[in-house]
Amino acid sequence: MRINRIKCYTPFALNTIKRSMAYKGAFFITLVSRLFTVFVIYFLWKAIYGSSVNSIIRGFSFPEMTAYITMNFLTGLITGVTGSIAMQIAFDVSDGSISIQLVRPISYRLIKFSESLGGLCGNGFFQIIPFFLIFIVIGFIKVPMSINFILYLFSAFLGFLCMFCFGFFFGLFSFYTTYFFGFNMAMSVILQFFSGSLIPLTFFPEYLEKTFRLFPFASMNYTPIMIYLGKLSGKEIVYALMLQIVWILLLYLAGKILWSSAIKRLTILGG
Amino acid sequence: MNMIKKCKRYINLYKIFLVQYMKTQMQSKVDFAVGFFSFFLNQMLGIVFLYLIFEQIPDLNGWSFYQLVFIYGYAQIPRGIDHFFTNNLWIFTRKTVKEGLFDRYLLRPVNPLFQILVEQCCPDGIGELLVGMVLVIYATVHLSMAITIGSIIWFVISIIFGALIYLSLKLLLATNAFFFMDAYQILYLGYNLSDFVKYPLGIYNKPIRFTLSYIIPLGFTAFIPASFFLGTSTLYSTIIVEIIVAVIFFFIAYRYFCFGCNKYESAGN
Image (cartoon, rainbow over the protein chains, first blue to last red):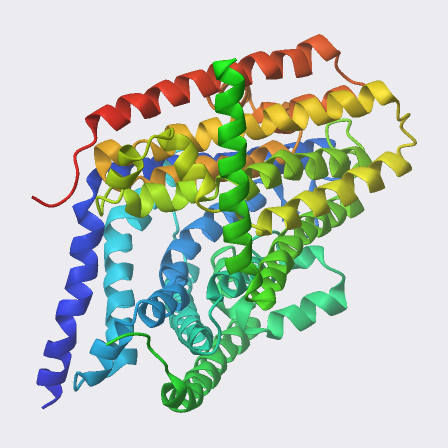
């Protein structure tokens, strides 16, 4: 029974991997351009540190900041694979293909989850590991030698789950609006900001930083990076990981509740 | 004479398309508000980022906070204009070629590129444009820059040619759809490089600076002309060069597009 259930979702995961391998040209361009992106942010920070009188800004030295932006990028590849989940749901709703998914005797949420998991595996082999090695070679990050690295991987996976639950919950709003693209864009901006992608949260005044850390967005990105950089003490790590789990559960429940009410008002045009 | 007639016809056609599209857009004013809001938010957070950085440093490579706000705001304006007029290129690169919809453009006795561009316009671009204007005016007041008729005329010229550079870049990348079916990724990544010209080019190393000035000349849509208004560069090294670059770039992009049109094979059998 159990095995059968896993079996029926594996094709969805495998298809996502296959799809990501199908466009090799596009893949290569993505690789080059993304590397370029990290370099540009690197230069921005280099200029900032060059203009500063202190060598440490808000608790980050320049090498640490370099590692921060690198890990921010890599963590984004781990957790962010589901970032488009909300958009995928919106597409399914707007072109009506969700109705086919709904008549099937399998869970829509699990389909999306296996697709995301497949995306994560594909990204892992074709992007995250190669990028990780490139960044070590060019000296943006050091070879990870401590327990922090294992904790990082664990925390990043929690971040992935957290992002998935959030993306699923948020994507369900596409049942209620026809203009989801705009909402999604606003949300991705907010996400960037509160997850520490734009700037480490320590740059905010202390009370804001403490508040932002409680938000689910910090659990998606900021927590794993700070663990990797060794910026959190043992006690703080335990607390941060627990917070991640709490958010996963809360967002999962929120998605479940919204799903049962959203599904009742789904309108699809045409036959 | 013929030329003027042709222009008139195209302008008339544009009006018809624009009015039609606006009617569909106005059906939902909420959509407009949401699009506007999200762009506004995006730009504002960028300013918050600069503000947080300037809490830590007195200046960035010699540029003050308000100078950076000016550059940042300026960068939004050509981008917003382009966004308003040429948004359909995104759909073109994703769907039109792949699904064989390009056929109908070739059947009508109007320039195919013109048809692609007029089919849709994006009111979200107005949001970018307004935010950019607000930031530029805000910075201008704080920097107590002199506003002359001359500087206003050059400002208008430089943003128009800046928008032309955006159009050329998008066209060049979107045209790849003729060869790869779906060039969305390439277009997306190329377009996103525009995020980086909202800061002074001096912070980057030489190869990147060169790339952003002459290979993917987005530098001319933001920092380079903005530095003229900030009084750190001469007119000739900024806006005049911008005009030349824009014209050449557009010429190349349009040629490539025409080449792509000839290579187009419809979908199906």
